[in-house]
Image (cartoon, rainbow, N blue to C red; front, side, top):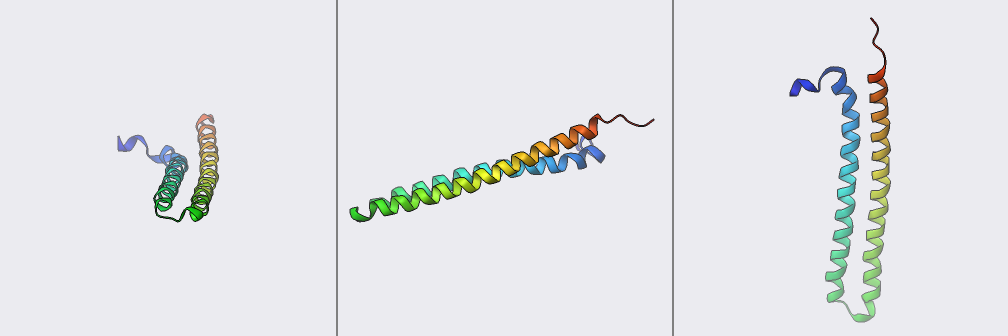
Length: 99
């Protein structure tokens, strides 16, 4: 199995695999940031003075939105890199071989 991805094919697939890995990692990080920020908001509002609840919730929502925006940008960059690497890989693979 290890020799199945070797030589030119292995080196051509490496950028594609890295781009896919970045995409998946950024999606997971985005979900984590949103979950943590909303989780901290819900625990923080339980012990806050009622007049300050709106401020604490707004801070949590702002943190979640900023994390989600960063995650979306990173995910889109990773997805575009994945598509570009796949196109380059397929174009190299479809070239006729010289005899």
